[in-house]
Amino acid sequence: MAELAQAELVSAPSITRLAAELEARSLISRTADPADGRASLLQVTDAGLEAVRLARHARRQIVAELLEPLTAEEIATIEAALPALERMIQPG
Image 1 (cartoon, one colour):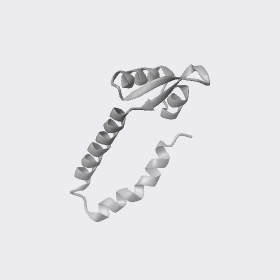
Image 2: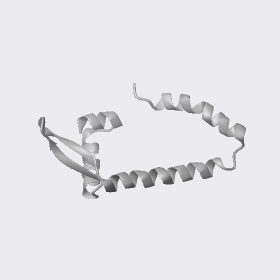
Image 3: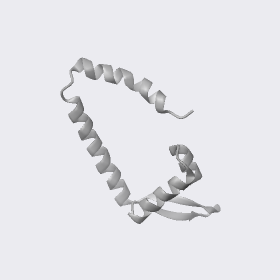
């Protein structure tokens, strides 16, 4: 959980609560780590994979609708800015 919290830039208690909620909704499963009894191994379930697929599809639709009225030049400007925006949100 600590590794996941660090990767997601949130506190350990926050990621623990999130994992519990995802597990309660059957979107992930949790098992004890055989190498470390204090740790848990998380695995996405089929329902979790489907939820991710649906969320990505919905986001693609929203972005497509937002981009639809833009000109090719405006879209090219946005595309050119993406690497800088990605660097801004990368940790470290």
